[in-house]
Image (cartoon, rainbow, N blue to C red; front, top):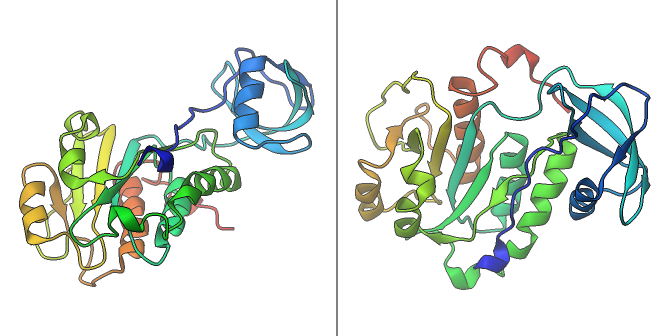
Length: 256
C-alpha cells in the first residue's frame, strides 16, 4: 500500500524579503524540493518570503547546488488554506480517484487518506484504478492552482485502521457526509484541524455507520443524493465556507 502514498511538502519559503524583478538565489535544499516537484528552468512556482508574503517566481537557472529565480508577482492572498483539512475518502471505482486527487488539491486539503470500506474498491483493485498515478495528480493540481504546498497522500487503509490513527484522534472536528440522518447545524466553534469523511458509491455500510458514531458528526448537505465524487467537491467547499478561507470570501473566488 505504501507505493500508492506520497509525502507532502510544506510551502516553499526563503529567509529573506523578496523584491519584484530582483533575482534571488535558491540554496540546495530548495533546489532539491523544486526538482522533486518537477519544476524546470523557465517555469514558475510559488514561494513565501521572510515577511510572510507569497510570490510567483520564475526559475531562471537550476544547478545541482544552487538556482536563481526572479519574483515577478506578489500574490494578493495566501494560496494556503487557513485550516488543516484531511479528506478521508473511500476509494472510488472507474478511476474517479484521479479526479478526487486533483480537485481536493485545488480545494486546499492538507492530507488525503484513501479508505478501503465495505463498498469501496478492494485492495486488489487499486492497480486498475491507477493508484500509482495519484501522486502525480497532486503535483500537477498544486502547480495549476498556484499552491505553495503539496498535500500528503496517505497509503490506503481500512476504515477501522484510520479511525484509530492520530489524524482522527488529534482532530478538532470530524464530520461525515450523510444523507440518511436528520439535518443538524455545523458547529461554528473555532476549528483548526478537520477530518471530512466521504463514503463510496452507495455510502458507508450500516456497520461502518455505527463505527463512525461518536467519532464523526453526521453532516447533511441538501436534500439530493450526490455522486461520491460530487460529494467530495461539495463537502470540501462546505468545509472551506464554514471554517476555512472561503468564509466571507465567496465573491473573491477566481474561476479558470
